[in-house]
Length: 444
Image (cartoon, rainbow, N blue to C red; front, side):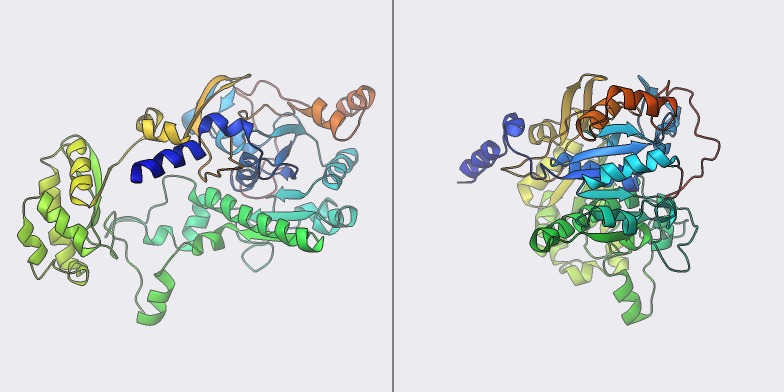
């Protein structure tokens, strides 16, 4: 029965049929005026499921993220830091400081369903492009403003933000790391990408509301507050006990055992929270008596810190004598959880991830063969997809201005001469504009 279900699921989500199926958000148009990651990741996620995304950047320099490649690396003028949150977007370059540039943006918003921005609070309003202005042109517009600390409040006005600040201000960094050592940020820009997902939830909820009422609305998101929403039992624990949650490294203080252990050929995560899982682990270690030891017989007993640490030392000594393959196999055989700590190289060749489309390989007409992470949620009737990689600044000017706004070649040339619109230059060695200011704020 299990085999037949697996075969049915494999056929239902067959990757070869993805581009033959409709898109869930087909017909939804999103205008993006964003920089870095928090803002751009939101339209990127929507675009994976069919939204038409038009990314507006400054002529020439464009999004700040084009200038912050990890370790200084560019590949064919493609910035690694810019690519992951800018798939499948139409790239146009408009100087919204210019009167005619503002008018172009308004015309795009008039034909849009959603506007997403992450400049500093009040900036869009000062430019005459905020929700109060655009909703007069398009009452159905759903307008999302994403910043580090929100649109109002004592800590929001004029303040730049980065993912690190959000992780710190939310308290996430404070509970992350090992006992007796400094707090640690996540190895990824967790606040940015999680924020993008939260923004998508808000936009989808607003689209549902608009479908019922015809009304658009203003949405705002604080990156730090979004991460607070991930803090599970931290606050209630402090409120009820008066104690602060402490850093515990990779050891889970709510499930025992649950930690990362060294094996003979790499690191492995092992967890056995339920008593029957722990019994299976003890059998795999050929120490069945541990399951009856008063220190370990129940989850409550195993969660006592002294017992938890003692148990982890026992498991570490055993795991160190086995290979990763052996440990994963024993987990399957005896019913406890075990998985290797993998890296990007492991993922690239992983047959499971490739079969599921989590690793997405495609041929891009500009950059050639590309291998990236694919859409995470799998929809059977309207699957997500990656259509093309990020494009240079203003790459789609002609397409968008002609097709969507109906501009003539003469009008486009005139706007180029006035530097209202523009295109890219050589990205390698390029520098941000002189008035560039960092953060989830005004860089335009």
